[in-house]
Image (tube, rainbow, N blue to C red; front, side, top):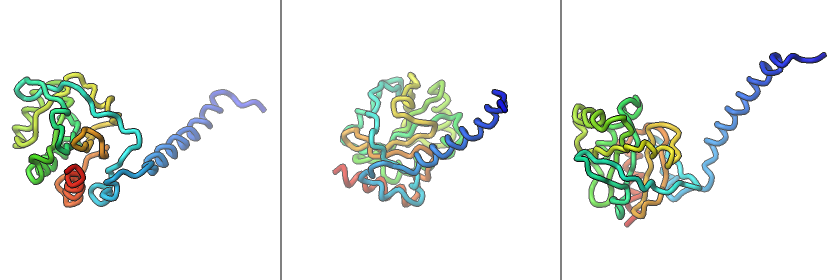
Length: 195
């Protein structure tokens, strides 16, 4: 008996969906080679991953709050946590106070939180940071909107930890509790490795 194309498609669709789901699950479980700080990927930092073929740090000219040019390479010598975010991203907005607390706790000569907004306008981000009293976070705007593709972000927020040479240490492709003891331990370990 010959099966109609519609019936065959209806049978195949769930199988394709199951195969796709299994691929995503097993891909997420395979971190590949472990990075130097993967032992800190537990508790509040359980989403921290090192990737084998990490992309190069973007060499883009961003715009700061005064209209000047800033690049991630301006932070050479420091460990930086680059957070890509936007005011229209609910998880990003929820995460910003924790990033601010991380900056207040550990920010200095050896470490900086670098927040890069992907809002349509820098004014949206400026108003948000002012209203939420997050003045210790930098106002940096990606006017090209190309950072996510360059760092292979699958969504926002995306936080990437770089060493003082601009090499990726690892990333958290989800919101995180950056003001937790687990996060502080991860950042302190990165700073120790950088000195």
